[in-house]
Structure formats: structure tokens, C-alpha cells
Length: 254
Length: 256
Ligand code: HEM
Ligand code: SF4
Ligand code: FES
Image: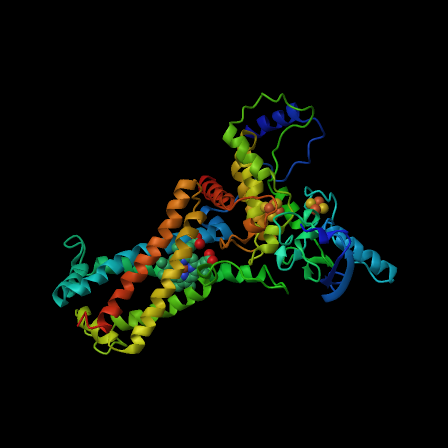
């Protein structure tokens, strides 16, 4: 039925010999949404943007939660306990936390895999460098890949330190305050955290505004908001996270 | 400009130019001296001067692409001192030698991207851009006599946006400048040019999906939003053009 109508239209409007019919007739079938997105550079970048924003939202909450350390062991440890009872009695003990962990794990994996695949592609698309080199792009822009690798390594260390307690000098479950203080009394733990936090700050500075563009923010007002927001977020996250090791180092947190 | 710059023919330059006999041969930078270069010459006229001396000496002239020499065809791409089309935001044919000084050494290289293989010397094959256009950068309409101009009303903002994007001349400077060899700025200019117009509306989704698919298939890299493309573009296609195409793409992918 539809086909008949289309034929009539073609005959009525064409001024030249119609092009040979494609077989099969009709528009070509396109793959599904997920295949389309994952199969294209734009789609994969959108996956990277959304997963990055999910991690960023978590980081903001995580940073604010960490500030509890300045109010003493009861408040910090009580807060950690509350995180595990959150959602009860609908949820079982610690289910909320596990839900968050599952979402974050998915975000990290999707983000890392798309970053890796897109980076491979980008490097292959420019096989020859120019003989005449000149400085390019901002520091935050140029360090996205190395910064991301630093962050991935840091994640492993961070989980072994303060989640499982494996590499923490104290590593006592249910006592994050004491674990944090014990950990940050080691200079190498401080160095690792400071480097990672600076890396995440830079990553967010380019990443947040990038994500807005990847997801299609075009209006000048909104663009200014996201550009400025990237700087504010990066600064807040950096200062907020840095305050904890600095607090322990200066004896403010003890 | 000071008076000692007259008489006009006075610059002496050292050129380091990429020479490569054909696509499969190895290439390298070769050094040449040129004299009597007037500041009023275009960069291409300066290369013409070099080529005349090369021909007189019985050497192969430097191959470079050019056609209109008035900044509208997009053929004359080359990277000058590491910048696509050189230090000014214009095409190489519209770049004048007054932007260089007597005694300068100038590096000249072809566009570098996996999707732009070198044909010879400074000439690259940019037909990948044509295939991206072929995948949707047109409107399907019956040909014949021109339609009545008032038949389709175009809102002023849409007309302005379309004109901004229609300025793209397909030169490929954006690809050459991009550290990822990405054609996002070019493709976004072509997609937005038609997608903002009522005439482009019927194929709005298939256009962006098809052109992005072709762009990827040609081996261009992805966008990391470094902004090098928009800085290099001689026609001022702006960065938000890319975000606008991203939006069109996500919208089309969800709608399909
Ligand atoms: C697993 C470790 C990580 C790796 C390997 C990684 C790598 C990358 C890379 C290569 C990019 C693209 C950079 C570019 O466009 O030039 C990127 C973008 C981004 N990253 Fe990460 N990253 C990691 C962790 C994080 C974290 C913890 C956050 C949360 C704050 C984050 C947020 C973002 C955002 C928002 C973007 C922008 C996406 C876009 O351009 O549309 N990333 N990441
Ligand atoms: S977007 Fe600009 S730099 Fe890229 S092809 Fe078009 S005119 Fe050239
Ligand atoms: S020769 Fe046509 S734009 Fe330069």
C-alpha cells in the first residue's frame, strides 16, 4: 500500500528518469538505539559523558560526606553507619550502598572502555605528526588521557585503602575516622591522594564542559553556565577532597 | 608599513617543504631559498615563484592544490609553520607575504590525517569529505525551474544560522588542525546548514545519522573538544556548531 503511493509520487514529481530502485525497496533498516550509539564516535562520547556525570555526581556527595571528618569520630563514623542503614526498612542493611557501588562500577567500566576505544581511534586518525610543532590546547584538555589512567590506578588503591582496608595501617571496618587518620599519617598516602585529587580536578575542568557539549548544550546562556560551572565544580572538588589529608597532616584532624 | 619596505621585491626566505613523489613513496622535508618576494604576493604566488626557479633548474616543481585563488573553493590547503593555512585566519591563497619577515624560515607541510592520504608533495586526497556530503548533505527535491522564492517561509534566525554554516568551503583545515584528525566541524557545518531550514526538515534525522556514519567510516577521529578546528577554520564555523550536531544526532538516534 505504502509502496504504491510512493511510486505514484515519484512518477508525478520526477523530471528525469527515476533512479534504479534499490533492492529491497524502502529505507534501509538501521540497527537499534544501543548499537547505533555504541557503534559511532558521537554515541560512544555520549556514553562517556553520561557515565562521567554519574561519577561526578557521586564525587560531589562523597566530598561533602568526607567533610564530616572535621566534626570528630562520632559524627564521621555515625555518618558511615547511616549510609549503610539508608533505605531501611524497605532495603536490607547496606543494600543502598551496594546499589550505588553497582551503578558506579558500571559507570567506571563504560567510561574507561569508551575512553580507551575512542583514544585508540583518535590516535590512528592522525598517524603522522607535523614537523613544525607548536603548543596545543589547554593543560586540562591535553591531560585527559593520562589523568584518566592516573584516576583508574588511584581507584584501585583507594578501594584497597579505605573500603577493604587491605593497605591501610589500621583498616578496621566501621571506623573510617580512625582509618583515615592512620592512613594520612603516612607521607606516601598523602602524596598519592594529592596527586589523584589534582588529577580529578583537571579532569572535571575539561570534562564537565565537554559533557555539556557532547550532550548538545548550544544556547549561549547555558553554555556560559556550564563553562563557569566546570571551573567552580573542579575547584570545589579539589579543595574539598584536599582538605582531609591536609587536615590530618596539620594535626587539625587527630 | 615603513617606507624601507619599498621597493616591493625584497624578501628573501628559506622554505622547508614536504616533498613526496607519490602516495606510496617516502617523503621528507627539503630546503629551498627564494628571493625577490614582495610582501604583496600571496603565499601561493610565492610558491609559484619558487616553482619557476625549480623549473628553470630542471627540477620537479612543488605540487600544491589551488583553484579559485580568492578564498572560496577550499582547494589550497597546506600547513604553514604548524598552522593550517598559516598564521592568519584565512585560506592560503588569501594569505599575504607581508605576514612574514625577510630572512624567515617557513615550514610547509600537507594536511595530515589518515582520511587524507598524500597524493604528491602538498596535495592530499580530500574526497572523504565529498563522501560525507554524499551520505546526506543535500535535500531531495524535484529539479527543474527554480521554485517561487516566497513559497517556503524561512524564519530570520534560521536563515542566519544556515548562512553561517553554509560558509564552509570544505577545505579540511579543521581536520588538519585537529589532534585527532576529526571532521566534526566540517560535518556539523554541513548538517546544521540544512537541518535548520524547513527545506532540510524532511531528511533531518537520516541526514545526521548518515553523515556521522560516513564520517566514522572514512577513518576520521572523534571529537575531544580541543577547539583547534574552530581556531583554524578560515570561514569562522564556530565550536557550538559541534554541540548542535551532537544534539541533532542524539535526537535522531532516539527518534529513529
Ligand atoms: C576510570 C578512570 C577514568 C578514565 C580512564 C577517564 C578517561 C577519560 C577520557 C579519555 C575522557 C575524554 C577526554 C577528552 O574528551 O579529551 C574523559 C572524559 C570525561 N571524564 Fe573521565 N576518566 C576517568 C575517570 C573519571 C571520573 C572519576 C570522572 C568523574 C568526575 C570523570 C568524568 C569525565 C567527564 C564528565 C568527561 C567528559 C565526557 C565528554 O567529553 O563528553 N572521568 N575521561
Ligand atoms: S569547517 Fe571550516 S575548516 Fe572545516 S572544512 Fe569547513 S571551512 Fe574548512
Ligand atoms: S585556491 Fe580556492 S580557496 Fe584558496
